[in-house]
Each structure stands twice: as C-alpha cells, then as structure tokens.
Length: 112
Length: 112
Image (cartoon, rainbow over all chains, first blue to last red; front, side, top):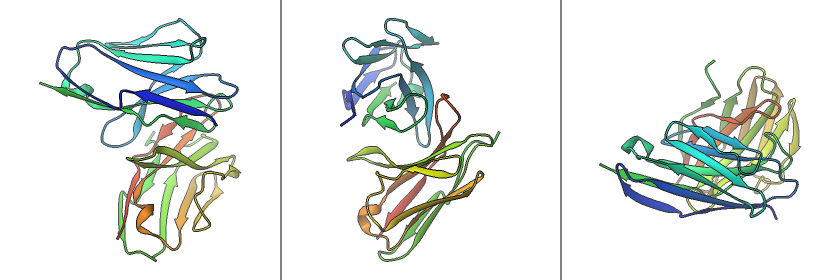
C-alpha cells in the first residue's frame, strides 16, 4: 500500500531557529513529491519535486528530494511566527495531480 | 480567479440527518477530488472525478457516502444518514494536468 510518512508530528521552536521537516515515501510509479502548508484553512502549495538532488527554494523555505533513499526534507531558516502551520507532504500515485497520498503532517509552532 | 469554492463553511447536524457539501471548482480544471481530514487519520482521499466522470471511489467509507459531478462547475458530496464519526473537515480540491492541486477552504462538519 502506498504511504507517506512525516516526522516529527509536531515541533515547537523559537523565532530565528532553523527547522528541518522530514518526509519518507513508498509509492508505486513514483513521479513527484509535493509540499503544502496548511494554516487555518486550505492547504496551499509550496513545492513540487521530481528530480533527486536539485534544491527548490522560495525565500526562507527550501526543499530537496532523494529518490534513492525515498525521502524529502523541507528546511525553513530564520523562522517567524507566521511560519506556524501544518506542513503536509504528498505524492501522486500516477504522477501529476491524480490521487495524492498525504502524510499526516508536521505541526510547526514558532514562538516569539 | 476566486479559487475553489466550498459551501457551507460549517455544518452542525444531528445524527441521522442528511448532509450535502458543495464544491465549485476553478474554471478549466478537469480533475476534482474530495478529501476528508481528521486529527487521527490526516487527509484521506474519498473520491475523484476527471472530466466529470468518477474515476476512483475506493476511498468512500461506506454506502452512506455518495458524490456527484453533474457538470464541470459543480460537485456535491452527500452523507445520508450522518453519524458522529463523520465529523471532520471535508476538502474539495481541483487540478489540471500535472499542475499541483488547489484546495478549497473546506467544510467543517460536526455531527452530534
């Protein structure tokens, strides 16, 4: 059965800290891995990763994929209280947007 | 673009009542997904449609759940009769081709 596992389940840090969120996967016909951020409402898209070793970056957030070891990490540097959210990792079973399998998420709390 | 629009935002109902959740996809998106999110199980795919046709409903928990997509701009998820264990946040998400999914703000369902 396809699955995506995230760790840790929750994390509490202080503003300015750097955090690393982990995502491992076992998905048949793997094509890509996606990261979403969920604050109070809808998950919003952060990154889509398809190639090993190529870092994707957006401001203080970056992510990388290791297709050999079947995992991805999401890094957030110089965290701010606005980074507090649930970070979700997902992989589509057949590539593209079809049938995303989600991890349970990492709840990040950034304290002032 | 108004994004994926779901209604109602909140629904509180008594056990045994029928519940209908609604979704208006982003114009031009040809895939539509219904997800359910709980603390225990995270985001679970219930059913997805492609070009208004149900492709995979294997995630629908039981016969009490049904979903329709009568046209490209509207979908419903119905629970009849509802039970307390159905309490969750129900998300509709839509996509086009290999683009990442866009989520609605969800409907928080409470069945007492």
